[in-house]
Length: 102
Image 1 (cartoon, rainbow, N blue to C red):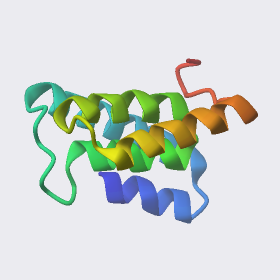
Image 2 (cartoon, rainbow, N blue to C red):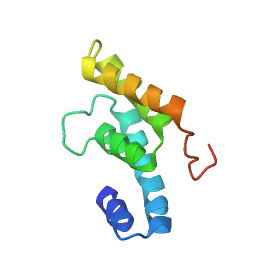
Image 3 (tube, one colour):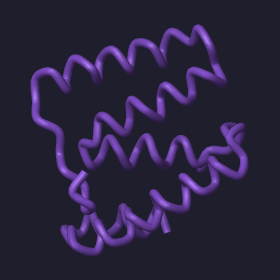
Image 4 (tube, rainbow, N blue to C red):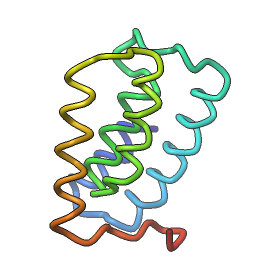
């Protein structure tokens, strides 16, 4: 479903992208709750969510997820750098509002 949502985005069908991306987000969050250490596959729920949040400009959600990854990889410099980068961007631009108004 993740690839389908990306295809809709590339085709300019933003309404369908929003619909499917909400389902993708829910499913990926559920997968993390069930198995928080599922990080090895190329389509693991963390990768999917990070890409989705970046695509949608949802930087706060991306930071929250990166901080969760820090608990699995304490001291990872790339995670810290990305969190700092996103934090700086949040300070410069308003956050997008998701489909639930959050």
